[in-house]
Structure formats: C-alpha cells, structure tokens
Length: 430
Image 1: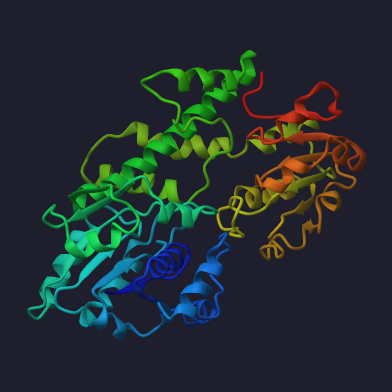
Image 2: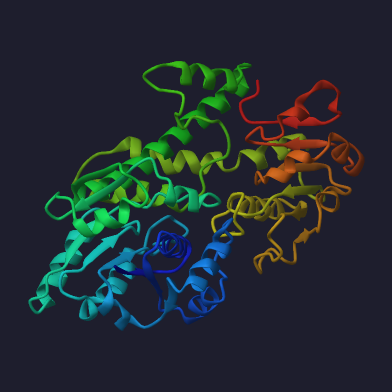
C-alpha cells in the first residue's frame, strides 16, 4: 500500500514518520520546498521528542520520502490530509487554505483511492470536498473520510502510535478496508460514524476540554479570595463519580490559542450561521482571555501596580514543554505585557535560542536559569520544562534581589515550604 501525507508541519511530519515506521510506503507532500528539503535531511519543522530519529529511520529504510510533486498522489492508495490549519490571532481558522490544497490534488487522485482528512476543519467541509471532486471526477470513484487528529506537542509520537481509540467518519458510515488496514496498525478500537459526526466529535471534545479549563480556573481564582484551596476542590471534584478521576480539572494557566480555541470558534460560527443561541460556548474564549493575565496581575500586585524598572525573570518561553514552538505561547505574551508595563525582562528556555524580532531588543535571553534569575525581583515559571524541577530554592534566594516566584500551575510546589526562603504564588492558593 502506498500512502501520501499532504501537509508537513507538525501533524503531517509526525503522521508520515509514524506511518513509515509502521511499514507503509509513505511520501510526505508539501508545496513548501524549504520544509521538504529540511525533512529530507531529517530536520522536522518543529521540535518534537523522537521525531528527528523517526524521520531518519524512515529515510534510511526507504519507506519514507518527501516531495513537492503533486503527481505522486497518482500512485497513492490513501491520501492523508494532515495540514495544521492556519489560525489568526483571533483563533479564526483559514479552512479555505486547506480546501485549496486538497482540491489541487483532484486531478491526480487515482480511481478507488481514499482521501482521509485529519486537519481541523469546520463540520461539513469533508462532504463539500467530496461533492466538488465528484463534479470533476471524470468517472473516478474516490472515498472521502474524516478522522480527528489527536496529537499533543511534546508527546505526539506516543499519541499517534498508541491512541485509546480512533474515530473515523465515512460517507456511508461503513468501515473502509483501506482505512482498517492502516489504522489497525495503531489501534483495534476503531469507532465508525458519519463524516459530519466525526468532524463534530473534534469540535465537541476540544470545546469540552476548553470549558473544563476555564471552569476550574474561575473556581481557583475565587478560592484565592475566600481562603479556599483549589487543589482540595479539584480532588473533591475528581472523586465525584459523575465527573471522574481523569477529568480535565487541573487549576493552572489558560489554554493557549490554536487547537482548543479553533474548535470553540468553529462551534460559535456554526451556531451563529444556524441562528442558534449558545451563550456557554460564546463565553469560553472571553473567560480564558481574562485568565491569561493572572501571572501579570500577581507580579504587578507584588509591586503595588507599578512595574516600571522592575527586573522580572521568565522561565520557559515555548508554547509547551517538549517543543520549541513560540506561536501563541503564553510565555511570549507575558513577556510583551511585562515590557509594556515598564519591566525589564530576563528569560531562559532550554530549547529556544532565538526571540521573535519584536522582543529581541527588550528581553535579555540568558543561557541558564541562574543567568535569567540574576538580580531580578520576581520570577515567573512560565513553561514547565522537567529540568526546572531541579532548581534549588537557593537559586532563587541567592540570585534574586527579592525571591518572589509566580508559578501558576504549582509546578514547583515544594517552594511553598516555610523554610525555602521564597515568597511563592500559585493559582488557587487561599
């Protein structure tokens, strides 16, 4: 079986490498020649643990290749559309970009092949693409299907190769032999449904997770004001059988824009288009946006609302641990807010070595935690890199002018001990 994976950013690079490692003859296809050439040398577009080695392995075995040539889709039994759907600063996705890319393959799709879409797209898109192909098919029969992507930055390979289950939507709700052959390599738990249902599943899961995040964060902020401990409330909620131990109820940072927010916006747009009132969905983004300023507020309160001239350390800059992605990073937004407030920012991240151009003049990027902390009056633990757990309390008390640490997620909770010498603030501590 020959597979073409279209779109080679994070989702596509992981998908192609994992398919090749599972034994499939896989070609990664993208119109960006720079990305393709880098992948040919085992350099993925984003830092993802294990991915360079997996790509290199696929290239060495000959099961994995990369190209910009759309005509290679003529040999594919399966075309897996894996674009990371572009999204603007308001979390509005450019679904039309993905649609144009798929339509560009229409002349090259061979009779009897399958097009599986995993890019985040609004419900109805896959069916619309199938209808457009039918109008220009020239008698070719192509099956279109949708399967929601389930990747997580920093743990993408594990998420792809060992999923709890795989959702698959097909035009007739029936299992596809081609898809079964491929997907059963990764899971025996395939859940088949209509295309629209599968697309809606992605919207619903991400909106539910986003609602859970905003709910527990609002509860945690109230806990701070009334003397309650959000961690106690969290434990009690998880013990409730109707909620469950694995509920997405960890008080902490706001969710970053992109994956979750994209589907919340999709649902809001769908509700509006159909004249449906959906106040709960409409409030998720606003609540999350307000919560993003919690670290800045706690630092500002420490200095009576005046950050001018204050030196603040920001530990961690990437979108999340395990990646070097900076787009939509809450840490980067915090740096910008601190600078606007007049603070002097010193930062460190284990993998980020280059700052966005607008931050380069205002942020001193250190080569170590100690360098970032030196002479500062507040430190914000912004990205939870595992190596930060090894920071000793003495690093804060000896390097900083004032050992005040803001740790929204409670990642360094041992610092709260009375003898650490560190003034410590975490979300939801009364």
